[in-house]
Length: 238
Image 1 (cartoon, rainbow, N blue to C red):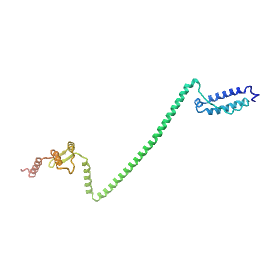
Image 2 (tube, rainbow, N blue to C red):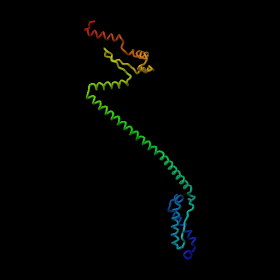
Image 3 (cartoon, rainbow, N blue to C red):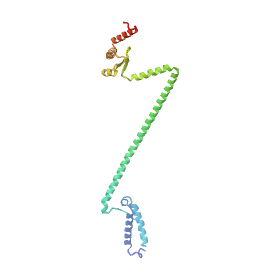
Image 4 (cartoon, one colour):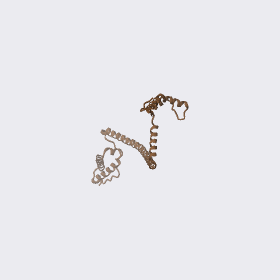
């Protein structure tokens, strides 16, 4: 067949190879052919070229087709270069994003675990506190059932202690009158830079007494109140 059926077998092979290449190039994407798809295209060209040779009865057997180099046409080369650069930028951005994700995900998991542990600790603390309050209430109920009046009085005194401890103002009920004496202890403490401590010196106590003196009833007021009360008891007689 190589000698009889075809007048110029080599030229026929060149034409058939060019036709097979054009067919495969037109059937695939250019970027695939120019980058990673050259081996697949070479195998497809070999199969198609062998089919052409068999149809022409050339007796030629195609052993191998190698695509050594693939370049875009000059008319579209700038556009193709732009596509390549854009793809490289995309790959670089993906790598950076993946690197950032690999860094942030463990940190986020650690933070989530820390918050879970804090929540569990708060839960256990709240449960223990609630159980303690419940136990205290049960004990208080037992004491109340034994002595209701004493228990009420004790609770009242404890409540007053809690309230008055946090207060910086004092109200004094003046005996023999309807007025309440107001002592602005907070103002006095602001004016006095040195705090008066329990167990302090005599001079400290004397200074505090001098500061409280303007707010306390004097002897004349007390005597007037006593004389008025005494006159009332005698029916208005002097």
